[in-house]
Length: 317
Image (cartoon, rainbow, N blue to C red; front, side):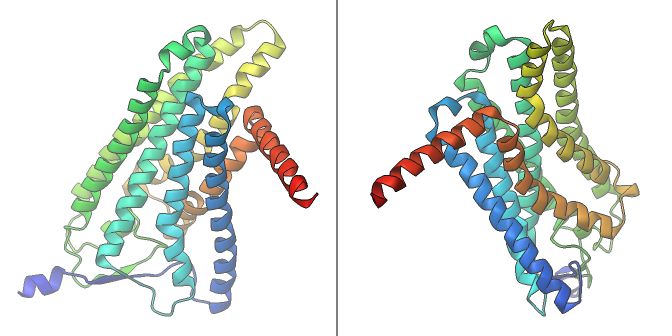
């Protein structure tokens, strides 16, 4: 019974970003606006792709899933963060903390796998365009997406189960903005070296493997682009990959820096800022990157806005 009392924690306290009330109110307004833009932007991307038949291609099928993941990832962290900005007791129940870790870790893993799938799609489009429709058929695209979702979810389930079996003793203060895996693992009152090894192995499998697949794809893509004789041809070929390459660079770089070596991880403040980058900034930026740098998406927006203008003019006439 004494052991149960010593190891069972009913809730955790998230220390968050600041204890100053004025700062917390300002951050609440800022992050609320960013979250609304994130959800609206990703929702509009999904709706746009569904409505425009010209976007019913493998690339935009993957982008639909990426937008769904981004909106869901932000939702797994930001609403709780907003609530805690205005709360005096910044507690999160044990089960809620476990659920948050499961969803955020799982969705993060799914995103990296989807980016690798999208890199393969761009590789086929640039390096083997004549067989693109044959290779990237509906069955393969569906299997690639399902594999990404299942793999990310299984990885997260294993990590969540292992992490919340650790004895926390009386440690319940998480010096973070959410139930992030490294922050929770550090609460354990036992040796956590084996957990750090599991995190590192998982990072290699679920992060570095897709990263090297992306890297290999872009090596082949760049090699193919350089062989194109005309400047216009090279520009068009690069343009098909520009949006995805921008997102890949932003996503993979920071995560590799954070997770691949837990023993030499950045400071607590850096970890909080990195988590904010992925939970708030990246999900908001992705729809903008794909909208502003992609001719097909911009054309679809113009077409949709044109139809909306005609519809509103008929109503007012």
